[in-house]
Length: 172
Image (tube, rainbow, N blue to C red; front, side, top):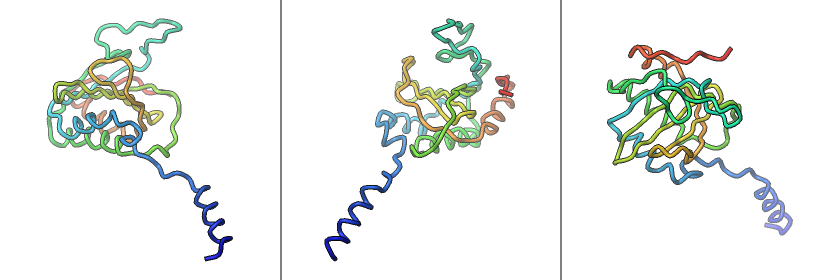
């Protein structure tokens, strides 16, 4: 191989985009969250209202039952195997997803998942509108990670509606 070939190959390799990393590679703190998603038997799905988000500028206050800074419209324990699978599959897809996705920047979460596992509480607030989720541990108001979250809201909406839980109004 000529020196010119080696130089050209090295230059091409240097210009190649870095391989996409998974959310777990980017945020090692997500490892216990992954274990909770895989093994938790206590899973609650919440309907949350993004319009009630506390904003430091206008200091809107969450009234009643709050999931971090959002009002809870209702919740249901997820127990049926097919429902547990529907919740777990979307969370696993997000945790194993890569950082090469694009998202909108709205973050209007209408769904929350709370998992109790290993003496900890793991919460995920998900926005299907922009494809993002925030992950919280043990009630700390600062999320440990923001992750890409592309899935089907209908699966979670079906679980909530069948339990008689009201859904947040969709954007127009």
